[in-house]
Image (cartoon, rainbow, N blue to C red; front, side, top):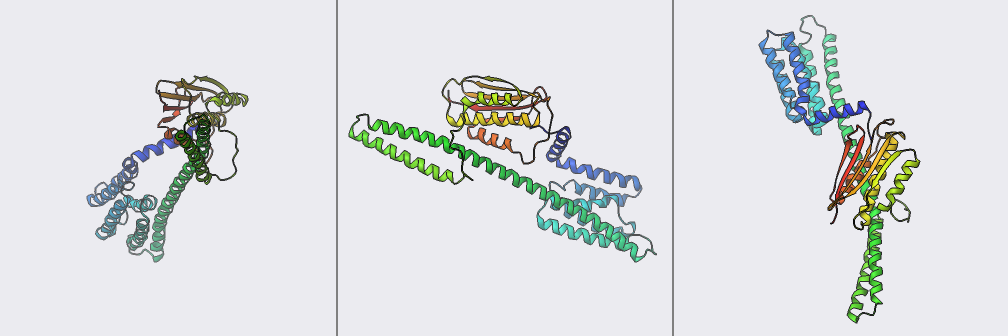
Amino acid sequence: MRPTLTAMVSERIESWLRRRPVAADAGFAVPLFALDLLLQPDRPLPLLFSGLLAGALLLRRTRPVWSAALVVVIAFVQWLVLPQLGLFVADLAVPLVVHATAAYGPRWAARSTLAAGLAGAGLGALTWPPVDDASAGSHALFAAAMAGFVLAGWALGSLHRIREERRSAEAQLAVSAERTRIAREMHDVVAHSLAVVISQADGGRYAGSTEAAHAALTTIGETGRRAMGETRRLLGLLREGPESLAPQPGLADVPTLVEQARVAGLDVVARLDPPPAPVGAGLGLVVYRIVQESLTNVLKHAGPTARASVEICWHTHELQLRIVDDGRGAIGAPAPGGHGIVGMRERVAAYGGAIRTGSGPGGGHEVYVRIPVSA
C-alpha cells in the first residue's frame, strides 16, 4: 500500500526527527536564543540565562525529566536575580518542557512540571508588567496568559501521548489478530499432516508385520490421533467463530490467484517457476498469502489501471518472491487500521526468511521476500 505524497513527506520528516531528537529540539532552542540575542545584544547576564534555558531544551526528548528540572531551576533563579527585566523569549522553554514531560516523560513528572509551570506563571505576574502603576488586572491578565501557554503545552503533550499509546495498542492487536489467523491456518496444516501419519501407521498395521511391529504401529496410530485431537482443541480455542472446512490454499493455487487479479482488471504478468522438490503445505500457504495481500494492495491503492508482476524463483537453498507494480494507477492513502504487512512479516519470520517492502526500481511499490529452503 502506498501513501500520498504529503503523507510520504510527513512520514520521512517524522522518521528523521525520531532518529535525531537532539537536532529536532535544536530547532526550538536555537531560534529562541537567537531572538533574545537580537532583542538584547548588549546584556550579557540575560543572554546567559537565555543560553542556559535554550541549552536545557536540547534534552527535552531524550531526557525530558532532566530537561524540565533544569528549565524550572534556571527560570526560578532568573526570576530571583533579574526580576526587573521580566521574561525573555527563551522563557518559552517552560511550556515546551511541560509539553515534553506530558508527551515523553513519566506521569508524575508531567504533573510536577505542570504544577511548577503554573506556579511560575503566578510568580512572573508579580514582577510583570515592570511598571509601578500597573494595575492588579494587568498582572492577573499576564498570569492568565502565561498559565494558558503552560496548559496548552500540557494538553498537546498529553494528546501526543494518547496517540502514541493508541498506535502501540493497535499494532499489538494487529499482531495478535495475525497470529490468531496464522494459528487457524496452521491447525489445518498440522491436522492434515497428522492424518497422513495416522493413515500410514494404520496401513502398516495390516501389512503382515511381526507382533512387535504391529504393536508399535498401533501405538503410532493412537498417539497421532491423540495429538490431532489435542491440536484441534488447543488451537481451536483461538477461533472466533465457525470457519470454512475447505482446504487451505497453497503454491498450486497462485496461478488461480493471478488470474483472479486479471479478471478484476489488473494487468499482471507472472513468472512462476516450479519448485525443484515438493513444497510443504505451510510454506505454500505463506507464498499464497503474500501474493494475495500484495495483489490486493495493488488493486486497492494503485488502481485497476496499474501494472504488476509476480515472480517466484527457486534457488538451491532459497525461495525468492517478488511482487512489483509500476505505480501509475490512482494512488490512495492506506486504509485506517490496515496491517497486512504485519501478517506478511509474521509468516516470513516463522520460516526464517526476510521481507523488504518499499519503493520499487520503477517508482512503484515492491514486496521482496527471501525464504531459506532445504536443498
